[in-house]
Image (cartoon, rainbow, N blue to C red; front, top):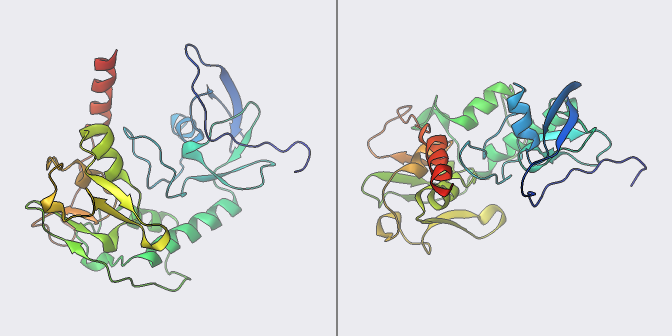
Length: 254
C-alpha cells in the first residue's frame, strides 16, 4: 500500500448522540456531511447524480448492483457509494472515465445474465434497468448472453414472478422484511444460480406468510414482479409509500 492511501470505510457502528461533521470533495466540489451519512446520500443532498439500481429510499442499503461505484483519490479500487462513508479531506469522483467504463460493463453483464427482452416486457418504458442503459448510452452488449431457462411463477392470484427479468437487487426481500414484516421473500444458491424465493422455495401462491400487499411488486425495478392482466409497457410501479411508511415507523418508535 502506498503512503497517503485513503481507504474508504464501509461499515460503521453509529455513535450515540451528536455526529461529527466532515468536509470532503465530490467532483472537485466542497461538501459537508455527518459522519454517519453515505457518499450516495451526501451526493443526492448536493444534487450530484449517481446511478443506482438496488438502492431505494425507505429501504436499508444492500450494495448489490454496484452501479453506484465511485472513485476515491489514492484508493486502490472503486467503491459502492451507497455503503461507503466519507472521511475528512476525501476526494471522490462520480463520473471519471474509469467509473463510467466499469458502470457500463456492470450493466452489460446484468443484461447477459438473464433474458431481458424489452420489446415484450410489461415494464417496457417504465424499467429502471432500461433507463440506465439509455443514460449510459449502451447500444449493444459486448459479452455473450447466457440465455438461462428460468421458470415463471404465476401461482399467485394477483401477481407474477418472472425470474428471467430479475436483477437480484433484493428490493423485494428487504421491503417484505423491513416494511411489511412478513419476510416471505428470501434468497437461495450463489453466483449465477442465485434466485429469490418465497418461503422455503415453494410456489408464491402456496405461501402462508405472504399478505398479498403488493409492496414487492411496486419496488421491483424491472418486469420481474408484475400484476396479472398487464400487457406490454402497462406495468407502472408506485413507490411513493416507502418514505412515508418509514417516517411513520420512526415516529412510533420515538
